[in-house]
Amino acid sequence: MPTPIRIDADNVPRLLRPGMTVFVEGSTAEPLPFAEALARAPEASAGVTYAGVLIPGINRFDYAGLHPEARAVAFFVGPAQRASFAAGRVRLLPLHYSAQYAWLETACPVDLALIQVAPPDAAGNCSLGAVADFAPAVLGKAGRIVAEVNARMPALPGAPSVPYGRLDYVVETDRPLIEVADEGGGADEIASIAENAAALIRDGDTVQIGIGRVQNTILSRLADRRDIGFHSGMITDVVMDLVRAGALTGARKTRDQGRIVTGAAVGTQALYDFLRGGGEGAGLVDIRPVSYTHAATVLAGIDDFVSINSALEVDLLGQVNCETIGGRQVSGVGGFVDFVRGARLSKGGRSIIAFGATASRGTVSRIVARLGEGAVVSSLRSDIDCVVTEHGVAALRDRSVDERAEALIEVAAPQFRDELQQAWREMRARM
Image 1: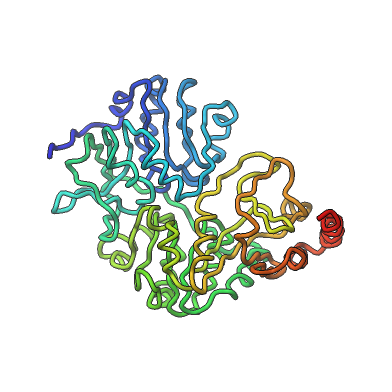
Image 2 (image 1 turned 120 degrees about the vertical axis):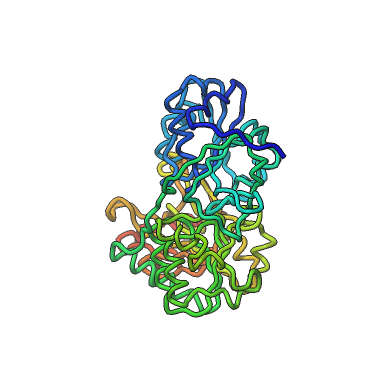
């Protein structure tokens, strides 16, 4: 197998040609030196389409904004992509994570892949390290691969790898990974939400969390549990804390027993040190692609699987919107539905949707009569299980439409309950 060519990051734009589709790895493995080099040579992106799963709040670079003739395929729209999306340069695909992986693997042409890996091991393989969610979907078919070989990327034994000789070009770096501090704790409202949600999680459950302060705070309340497991799209610093507290062992998992399974490490340097060889987590954590972490067949085999995610609003029918505010796209569906449905398939499984009952300093209810004009239904009413706010838990599984509405009104902010009751009476009369 040939040896890859060593280049500087500033040589990466020279590899681009109009008409190319370029995959860019996202999450905390985004190869930022390549993005910076592309920004210094914007003309190179004319006629180029960028594709990748870039996460709002983590990935802040707008590849479609590099040039007026650059384009991007995206699955989320965050603040960084807002202007390009408004200008029509971003093609938004509203797909679940499992379907995003399948699209990248089967339908997306990849002329060039920009990724980040750990240095080669003694066998000549480069670990994908702390992030392996989507890159495996394209590495087998990419025309050429340019890898940032970062000396600080932890090489986990439980992560996929790519042969060093499969890489066409390498840029050697020694820089910190993107850090994302835990957003646990905070307002009394979040503490109450976390307490209500944590009460639903038992010893031996296997937990999944989405990104956000509410989910991290819920996770932090589980230090007194025993033998909980973890299977998720992401791992945060709180997971490390639970391992050290003796709460998270995975000893009762019916699949991947004793293993922490995730697609990406999203945390601080302390978490990356925890995962690095010699760290406490190096032998415990399996970094796996989305084709495994989000697969329905895998999730169905995990008994007592509990998904914990958030939402922007839920209506009295149980429909969930986690993507738009006032009709404006602010995020994407991500793995939300994959995990909610996975929890339904799991023996003893359940899903938790946890969020504050109000927005805009208490002036807007996030439990609404019906999702408004421009809102999207991210998750169907038939999928929903438990909705949790600071005011309690609405258990919706196997309940009638009337029982669902009543339960949701009970966990809405008190100042909106009469209004919601009246709206439900009017809706019910028309059914």
